[in-house]
Length: 438
Image 1 (cartoon, rainbow, N blue to C red):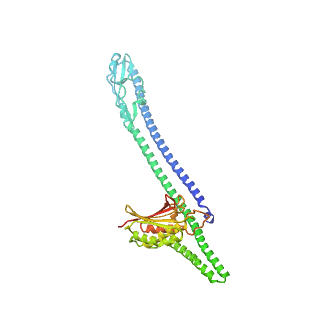
Image 2: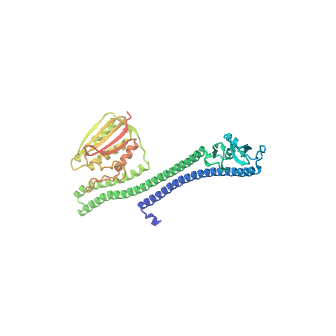
Image 3: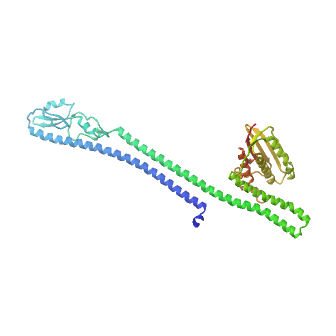
């Protein structure tokens, strides 16, 4: 078990893909085998029917050969006498007679053998329906009427006179096609199942890997966020101890220590909140709010903060827009977005714009700054826990990567939608949409 646990997810994925390829190859081989088997079965049936045709031809000719030989003996025994008409008790013979040689030319509408007997000829007339009576027992074959007139040899029934029924051939080919279609459909269905199963397992492996990466990222982020304020507080305490608790030093360092303790407290609160949001342990109280008034009130409350950060704030808020949302959660979302704009501002002054307008039946809130924007391709990834945009590796920006995740969950709980992208003129543009209620 210990050795198995040491196998990396990459090796598991390689083994899984190899097994999947083996199963697919096996299924494709099964389809090819069944198709080939169906073709061989059809060929076997056609060859069997062809053998039946050859056998029917040989059977008839064998019978006629016996009649021919017996009639030859009879003609020799008659020795020129003129017997009365004599009938054979054989279904293949319709009659027998002695005729003058000059009268044979008038028998073109009959099917007969002729044997010389003295100065006359012994005529043996064959029943023209007899071959059809024999062959009719085989539903696969049909008999073509033979030519009329004198037969010069006993083996006169050729394979061409015995035809394989076209309906039989069509039914054999139809059965073949039906079986091929069935095998192809079944094989394709199982291949689809295998591919869907492979995709599902791949997603599970990818999700496991992503969870592992998130766990490592969580440990890294939390360790980093905990270590910085703890190191700072430890340094402040050492400084205060070396200065023998100088009141001036204490007055200077105490607010900073308080700020670091607040930072630690916020991090712990956010981690606990993420767990509660994931487990849906918190309740959402949706209420009708005047979004225009609340957003104006929020904007007026952050003017001082933006100014102290060396920035400017502009607003464009349309009046009379009302929505249903959880107001405290919405305010926290707005505070998170403003906090990100302040933390990630450029060296130049910050310019933040907060706009609200009605678009069709939606209320659209936009937060736009003049910061560095976001890396391409991270528009959705930034809303995942502990994911942060690393604009400048040389610059350490405080934060745990939980703010946008919590903001997205808050907006979703109020039946809204939040997105982030780079503004056309530069900077970051965050858009929040809610359904308008009035």
